[in-house]
Image 1 (cartoon, rainbow over the protein chains, first blue to last red):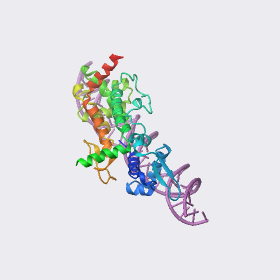
Image 2: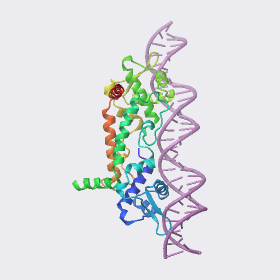
Image 3: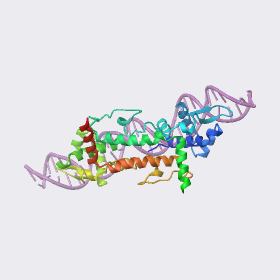
Image 4: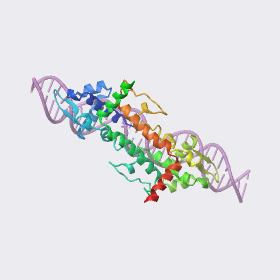
Amino acid sequence: MLSKKAKYGLKAVFYLARNYDDGLVLIATLAEEENIPRKFLELILLELKKNGLLHSKMGKGGGYELSKPPNKITVGQVVRILDGPLAPLGCVSKTAYKKCEECVSERSCEIRRIMQQVRDATAKILDTTSLEEARHSLFEIEKIK
Amino acid sequence: MLSKKAKYGLKAVFYLARNYDDGLVLIATLAEEENIPRKFLELILLELKKNGLLHSKMGKGGGYELSKPPNKITVGQVVRILDGPLAPLGCVSKTAYKKCEECVSERSCEIRRIMQQVRDATAKILDTTSLEEARHSLFEIEKIK
DNA sequence: CATTATTCTATAAAATTGATAGAATATGTA
DNA sequence: TACATATTCTATCAATTTTATAGAATAATG
């Protein structure tokens, strides 16, 4: 399950993607528009900033914006920063591998094998979809209807 | 992330799949062989039983076994029982749909759209892989090496 | 220097997870 | 029947994670 933190973070980041050309956006605006608890959002944005996804400016006229254009940021990046590795098990994580404690033999573990597939499928989707692509594919769908 | 509960449950179920022809297995055996805390495992097995995946017998000569052959039980069934829906968001769950609270329009939500893809990819893997298939595909891989 | 807005640090309530304890119930057998 | 065995049920609990909130510190602007 995606945490609320990641969900909030994605909402904020997509908002910033939609308004990329308009420059800095206030936390207050973001919080209000996307129905996110203000103080919680502050922490989330800060974390995304520290990981290089956002740029901010303090003081009057300040706010947040994407540090790169929306086609250079993937959904997978956002999720990993806020929720950690995509893998359902530490032993199949590429970005944060961790050996199973109970496991005797990794190679002969059926669970590892199938969760590896899940991780790969998830990563393929989230790491190849940029914020822009996610918006665009949504638009395509809307058009058809 | 898969919970320990689900991981333990899968370990137990795969053990029972491997020993399907030998009949009932003691909780104690399962716990020891798979390094699972005994008392915790009891609850897990009971839950799997109540959901129709396992059969048990009390008293002397008792124990647990799969209620169906290993090719009739999918990994997805086990995971759903122990960890709940596969979907990363309630609003894309087929088995346990739940509307997002903050969300204004589901149709125009980029997050929903991409998480839908993740859910579908995950479900495709876990719901089409039976315990038997998981074991078999593992065997195939081992053979190649 | 006053205002604005982000940043930092600390704290805390609520929920979930992982686990244990012990009594109750059912089964087989001597 | 009595005993040993093994699952089942109920209750509880510690630890961790999640979801926040509060307030002071820092930076930028005019």
